[in-house]
Length: 133
Image (tube, rainbow, N blue to C red; front, top):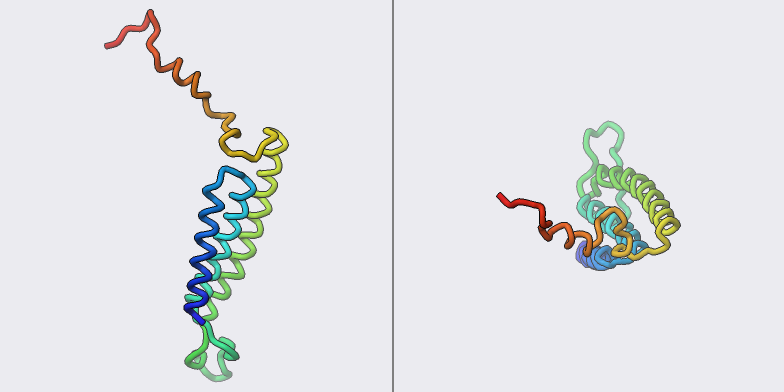
């Protein structure tokens, strides 16, 4: 079971990196969702995968029986799912507001705060009254 999960994590990670390298903001948000799911699946697989053996401690025992999955990664993943849902909601609202203001989802066209290239070239050329030291 672990090799299948490892391949699935690799495919999800590769797909998320591919989407995040795109210039489209919506694809970037989907890549962000995929990478968080891939990380959650990786942590879940690191805790161990067992069938029909819940990670419960029997009454009177200090430790769970051998061969069960670790419960700590499962609890961490529940927290990570809630955090990633909040991040997704924030990213979607941010992308929607950017689209409303700039009327594009192309990240290269969203460079409002950066100086234009032709203005940067004009600043690099020395003026006639400037002295170089």
